[in-house]
Image 1 (cartoon, rainbow, N blue to C red):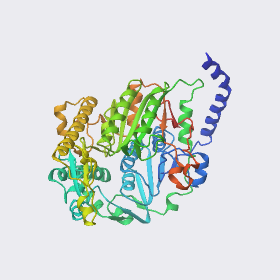
Image 2: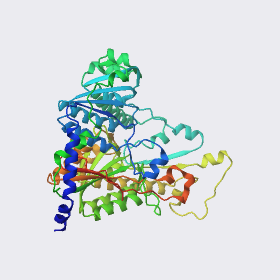
Image 3: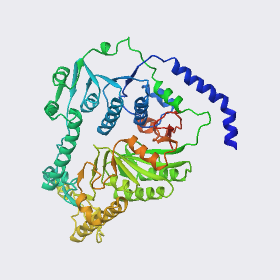
Image 4: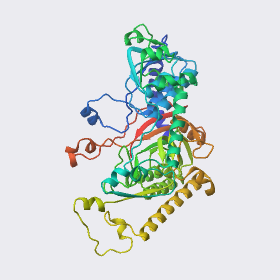
Length: 543
């Protein structure tokens, strides 16, 4: 009853808003081209007005906002041509790949994508090769480095200095410790890494050449000029920036796609919308600081993440949570804690995961608690297993005439010493602990992914690889919008709105001199109605 009275009270204002939308669209009749400059970086935290002014930098957008904009452009029948400029872009590989796929969807919808760039790298070339027409400045140069690896091994170097590193790994492919214990890869680890690199390179080359294998040698060169790319047929022409962005184009306003979609879906009596939260989880997994439970970018800390998950579970408005994960792993203990909290969250919400750049080891451990997993095709995943290393510095100390005596030691106490050699009893204990962690990891994967335990050694034992649906590592390949589409479908296709649960920008981390003078800045701001798929709203939120 109160909701109806509220709508009636504000009905005149909504009518005025509809008139504003229609008038804004009417004033842009006869135009055909939409101009877009890709953001150099994506916003990954909330910033208050004060912080933005203090930084003095231009405002940018989140990756989700760009994806939403591209989707609205694709669905807009009035936009015929999209002119895109590429500044130097500091994106990850999965971000380039995901945006590229959205550009291809726009092109396949019948629109022309014209793209211009002066410089860039492999990622910029991925975007350029997705356009209908591509133009470079005469002086353009592109640095190219295809997927490859050249890891360094410190084993012999450390032994020279008297540092002995002991490794306890759950499988021959769990190769993290080999950098500290060996002078080169083991045969199994090298073969696994080589397979991963080749698979990833083939995916990237296939995208760069659009399936034309004759073009592959072009991208082996470390530097490519505009002339070389034009001669190879990778780009369509060379123009100056002024020539490309000519003044006679009939341009829509920057807000036109959003205005059009909002007008199309506008209702005087809006329907109830179910909230779907996107929670980025990025970084190595640790416990963090129990006394300072503020989420920070680039860190997955149990003491800050678990309260966030609890808050999401207690919010009755939220119907689903998408965990956007990018993590190489970390603490097995805290991975298990986070895993258990996600299982608790699943009791009241639909919980899915999206794999972004790297989701391996502990990162995959926590993801197996989700109901469904969508992964970027260029995400590195796997590394199912456990590893632990311990350094013995006794010989190093003695080189500098330092000595430590064991007083009051008891069984297993040597494990906590960097000076005493491990007893056979302690070695067996550490080996048993690694097997115990591996067994629990396998159990979590088996339960979460419905894979028989007997099959896990085939995909486990520390192997890393690109995600596939065949081995049930993930449920589907795609981008964040694909994960959102799945969630919307599972919720019955009804109206939803999206919330990005980003960490607050913390001045204490950026300006150490402020110390305790400023606490973490928190911001709750709404960005208004932006359509993603039918009946969708995009907001920022922070708990």
